[in-house]
Image (cartoon, rainbow, N blue to C red; front, top):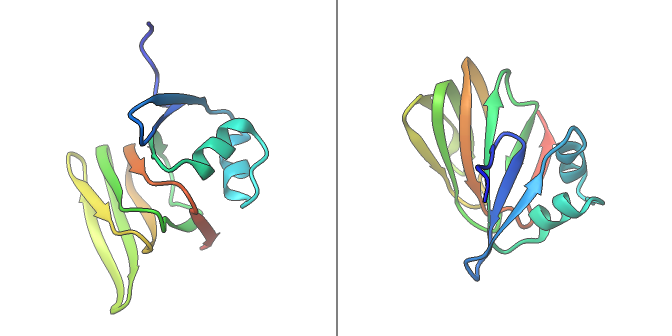
Length: 135
């Protein structure tokens, strides 16, 4: 067994308690966000009933809104500082999100983020049915 770098290998935590790994390259996110993924890794993430565990470098504002209908998303900010924006039925909510904190984004809520200070985000996402739209 080797240590896994979550920057280039994401984990899919399956409902039957198995863990599958997905190698990430420059094609992964565009393929996943296309709505019709073609690569095995993006298809696994899009279709799984489990959760994606991914670590991402937050260098700039998110270029899209996203929404996860299959379940709540847990975001843990390991370093940096974000401003998370949520579209709730009562209107947009802005959450100050400093390092060392976590946020739970409810299922079905559109969200995006602005980077106030670059850092690292750990996300645990019910990815099935995830949708994206331009910001």
